[in-house]
Image (cartoon, rainbow, N blue to C red; front, side, top):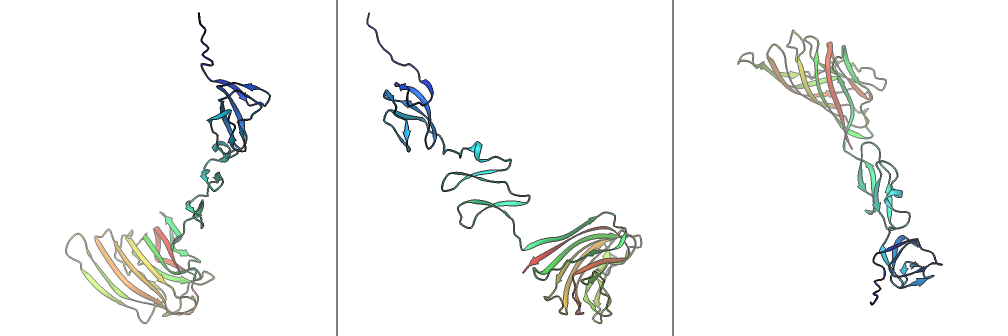
Amino acid sequence: MATIDLGKIKLVWRGTYSGSTAYTVDDVVQHTDTITSSFICTTASTGNAPSTGGSVHSSWAYLAKGGVAGTDVGTTITTQGDILYRDGSGLQRLAKGTAGQSLKMNSGANAPEWATASSDCVKLAQVLNDNVGAAYVDFQSAFTEATYHSYKLILQFTVATAADPKMRFLDGSNNELTGSGDYKRWGRQAYRKYNDNSGNTEEAWNQAVGNTYFDITGWNQNANGNQIHSIVIDFDLPYPSTSIHKAVRTNAVGYSTSNYGFGSSAGHLYVNSTAVTGFRIYSAENLTKFYATLYGFKK
């Protein structure tokens, strides 16, 4: 009966290639040259390495080609938060950034990098207090003329009893500036009962002769206290800060438990040449709730 030689009927794993081993067709080896790969023998061979300088010997063919040596994922990214990317030579690791940073392309537009987001509007200070228990809140060293040209304060607060809120500037030592006639104000305020059609009043403000503070709403209606004020204050401080005429604008709305609501809009001018670095919001009665955020607008 005739004998039929089927040869190998499956691949034969021979481990790491050895130059002294005789290999036959369908033997499979692992070999590292520029990269670690697996090769299948296509022609019986001894002493002919599968790959020399990246070109595969004619006795072998790639079975599975590996990645660039030393740049596989497992050895390239080593820390939680790392990012893997490819540059001109292979896989590279970008270490994780810090809190609040975002990913962007570098100046050469050829690799990613971490960067802190830049904004022309910056939150400079914030006070969130549900129980102030004091007559004032200071924003010290709030103004930085080298960086910002104007500022905006968004403020909501209540006071213990009937008292309209006021504001004064602070000097470089955080002392209140209280010069007579230095704070001027003009504008209008209207208030009315919001549960019926009575109690409508509109008045004009004119303190062109000046005062020792800014009235920022003029609201003093609720004898029971806890009136709510919502105020936006825009500071247009000229630079240098020692110049006179520091302009301020206020817009306010509010209501009281005695069914009165109000709205006001005013312009203010501080006309002392003393440098101002911050400000104080205060009342004749204790402030209770106070929520305020100060933003600066870059030059």
